[in-house]
Length: 328
Ligand code: NAD
Ligand code: TYD
Image 1 (spheres, rainbow, N blue to C red):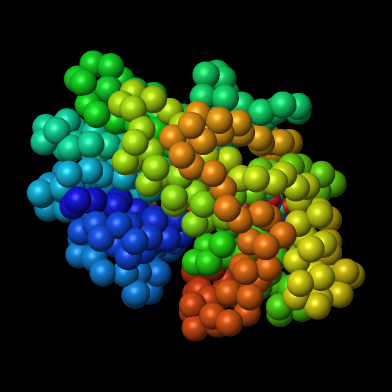
Image 2 (image 1 turned 180 degrees about the horizontal axis):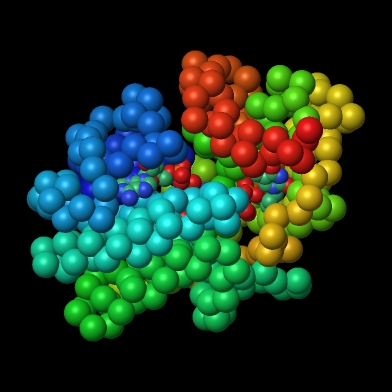
């Protein structure tokens, strides 16, 4: 099929585009604004047509969607800490961008999959969220993602758009921008820098290897029902401090580089998803956290060409703003 992948130059979108072009023979078109998080290098081994533009720009969307059978929307501002510091881009991309894509998909009867997050359900102390759990987002990031989910639902309900939503848990793996926990800690550990753990480090995340996430999204694209949401959760949960300790071991760093810093405001304590509904479509995660983390550390160790330009660019300024004071 001809598949439009919005935000396909980012972490999960590029992994998804690679799998669809290589294993499914899809004719992939990528629409991406190339924000700080989007990079053409992420797609260097993926056959695709590239359209440089914002999802909130109807002209760019019209150019990219031409002839598409389906659209998967990954494009978003994705980092919780940045959403706390400056929510405006989150509102613009998540709300106005999703709206522009929905309009274009509706006009042309293009099948639509919205990539969303477990964070729309909020934090859960015990048990796991199902697709019928109420949306209760806590950060500007998760609130704008929840808003986009609701807009998608309204287009299905009102206009009969053939649309579905996939809610993934915390993803990790190759090509993840090093603002997120795992790549940040891996690169800092490899450089002997401090590892900044927020608060007590006992917050729990449900870790999902990026290829498992990509396959789950593909499963929903090919077999999901219109109007439905599908959870795609990783096979293992782990407290942040434990993740960081494992990274210290895998990189051979010294435990003394672990530093507790002030907690993130409004920090969600635990995320956990039940993915039974997606499993019923024939998907299941294949990569356990121990294996995926080892593969991820090896990838960052072997691919300095990918992260060296990042660490010397915009990221430096972001890192100083975010961590400078806390780490002295
Ligand atoms: P990312 O930050 O690595 O990539 C986002 C991509 O979107 C980049 O290529 C960026 O250039 C592009 N983009 C941003 N704003 C745009 C706009 N206005 N128009 C066009 N392109 C734009 O993000 P990611 O981690 O790959 O996440 C992809 C999607 O998956 C997001 O929707 C995110 O909410 C969701 N998600 C992520 C995780 C996770 O753990 N990373 C978990 C669950 C769901
Ligand atoms: P993150 O990768 O930002 O994902 P999310 O907030 O979307 O779950 O963070 C994962 C967890 O790691 C979260 O509990 C916050 C914590 N964290 C730190 O302790 N230190 C850090 O430097 C970062 C980036 C995250």
